Length: 162
Ligand SMILES: [Ca+2]
Ligand SMILES: [Ca+2]
Image (cartoon, rainbow, N blue to C red; front, side, top):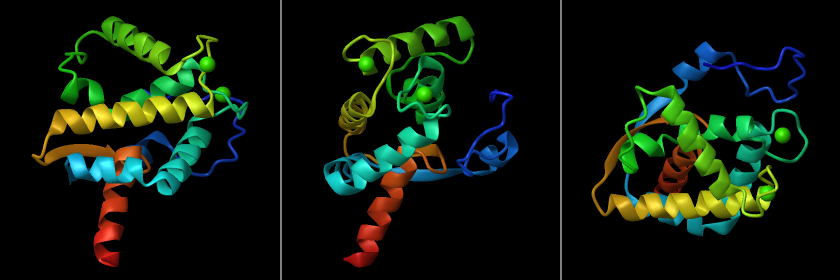
């Protein structure tokens, strides 16, 4: 499922091998407040967005291409759980969904997503997701380093600090 370019120049050490990435999934419980609190903590959110963006920008040109971004859309796992789209069976349909999501991110339609576009749209999507959740906690499988996972960590750090 992961196909990295063969030139092998990844300065970013957290792009591990695919098996390692599977091991780095965990099941977390999150609710509306977890996401909203995280998104509204502008400093924490901006830092995470920048890190996530750098992680996805595998060719380091400061922009996300469709290929680079679709990796993130897969890890967000919002499609199946919150938009009710049955995507598991049809890869063609899946590609179509990712394409239209990419267009949503690419506000100025120039074919790439810059940091500002990524931040705005991620924020919008996460808030839409929080809205859809209501107050009932939801169990989700989250990838280490994903924004939702960071949101959960953000929430628990705050609880410890309080
Ligand atoms: Ca790029
Ligand atoms: Ca753009």
